[in-house]
Length: 266
Image (tube, rainbow, N blue to C red; front, side):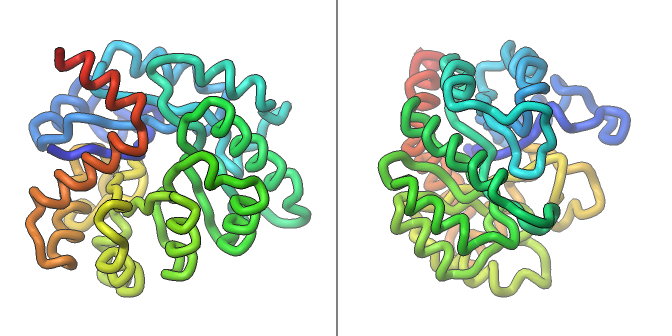
C-alpha cells in the first residue's frame, strides 16, 4: 500500500532503535509499507549498503555522494555509472547542494552535483536531490545541465512554492517527509496541498525526522503512513488515495523498480 521513497536503512542503529533490519522490515510490512528505497550518501559505504539490502526484494538502492560528505577523492561520472549498473540500483544520489552545513567557496559542491546529473543522464536513472539553503543555485544548475533530459525528485522538500514549481517545470517530483506533520510547518503544508497529485511522493528519510506522533524516536519506514495521513487530511482525501497515488508515482519515476517489481510478483 505505502512506499517509502527515501530512507537510510544502513544508518538505523539497532542499539538506539531496539530492532535489527529484519525486524524493521517486518514492522514496515505490518504497517503496509511494501517497498522502500535505501539511499546512498557515500561511495565508501555503498558496498556495505548494497550487501545489506541485497536479500530483500522489496528494498531498492541508489548510488551517490551527499553534498556535505567529505571524501578523499571526488566521485567520477564513470564510477557512478559503473556502480549504477546493478538491478538493485534504481537512482543516482542523493546529490545536490547544501549551503547550511558548508561555508566558503561552493564550487566543489556544485561540480559534484554536475557529475551526478551527467551520470543520471548517462544511466537513465533518476536523480535524488537534496537542497538546503541553496534553492536558487540548485535550480540554476539543473537548468544549466539540462536536467529536464533526465528526471528525479526533490527529496524531503522544505523550500517555497516557487522552487517547487521550477523543479516540476523541469520534470521533477516533490517528496514530503515527516516535516510536513510538524505543527510549525504551515507553509510546507500549504505546498503539500498544491503540488499536483501526479508529482507527489512520500518518504521518511529515516532514521531522521520522525513524524508526529513519533517525534523524538528513531524514524523508520513503518512511519511513512503518518506522512500520508497528514497529506490526506490537508487535501481532504483518504489515506488510501494518497498511498495509491504516491505508489503509482514512485513506479512511474523509478521505472526500473517497476520492471523488477513485476518480475518479482510473477
